[in-house]
Length: 213
Length: 213
DNA sequence: CCTCGAATCTTTACACCGACAAGATCTCTC
DNA sequence: GAGAGATCTTGTCGGTGTAAAGATTCGAGG
Image (cartoon, rainbow over all chains, first blue to last red; front, side, top):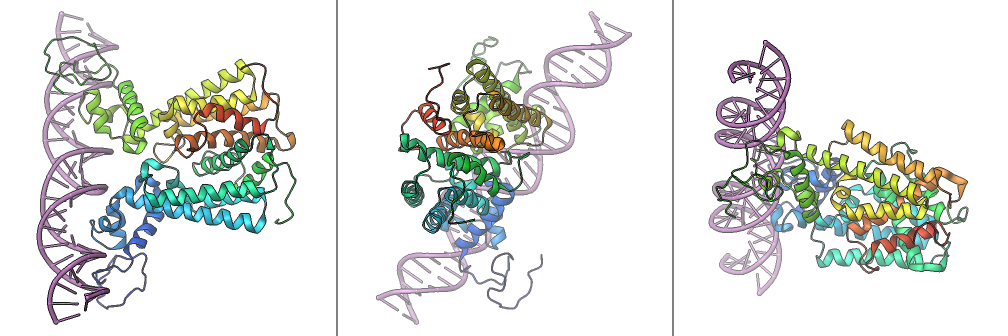
């Protein structure tokens, strides 16, 4: 790595390189740090990241992150907030588009697969400031969307215990996503989304929703 | 803390104090470190523990753990092994005693509640040496017991897709246990075992097994 | 009993990390 | 265009994981 090029090109590769001719202000260090964190978490897990390494990766000094996130937990708090908002968006969109109970479960698992770094942080409140108002808001939105979607859907669940049924649906998909992302599902087939469909069908015996494949 | 008492009392409180008159060899440092780790994990999570703090707690120098566990991940590997063996024992005993599908699920959740430190490590392979032969053995035993127990039980599940049903049962209880221990279940009732019963009943609509309360 | 190798523990050292404080540089508003 | 505030740097401190080398104790074989 030799970023000795003295030309004043602005943001040719804004993500990866640590350029020395960078202007004093990074431009969007906050986002760059979050992105670097997401990449690092995907590779080494949330416990393996270091603020200093992320700062190096973004081409800033080791103390630069302090001002954007108060501390390491602050950075992971931002990741959790982003994750819960993303999850809420995904669930809402899926519920409105398909109206299918099964597809909602699949969407939950798909979120865990497509955003593994977010998912690895969100449900680990010991890693971030769980009582931060932003994270409370985002988490609340996420659970609210999930609850209302399960409420308004044609219910394949035995209506005997509505609360238990909702929690069962959530637990089922969360458990599957967790087991998969922890690598505990070796020996099962290798397509987790197909697994999600088969598992979700166990809860809702309706053969297939006509709204989607 | 001033353990300056020069009396040569041997092991009056063998667990907690860091006594200076301790014999050069600890006696069972390995177990003491694991126990200290379990306590610390229960309080601060697996990410918050430090080998040096555990060594202090056990009253030995900071490098003493190296010989028993190769490194920090080695200590957590031992915790994971112990956890998987404990889980296998619990599940087997429950299956043989009650023969109830519902009770098996409840036992899974109960294990997560009664051994939170073990549970917090077991399904986080980025924290330990997941390919260690001992942990492979213990994990394999655990899943084998679970599989065979679900196989031999009177199946309340739709037999259409046996594999999916087994995975669904596992995912359901694992998800519930995970969500609970991450504190995501605020707003539900406060007894997780009762929750487990209600959730498990969602999967198996048989009202109640007569073998247990 | 005694000796010597191996197991266990200590001491020392090094690089890395998170957090803090103080100063440098840039930006933006009035 | 000047100053206030935001952003980043440099320097520092205690703590941590790991490795190497030395001290102490145990235990097996003479």
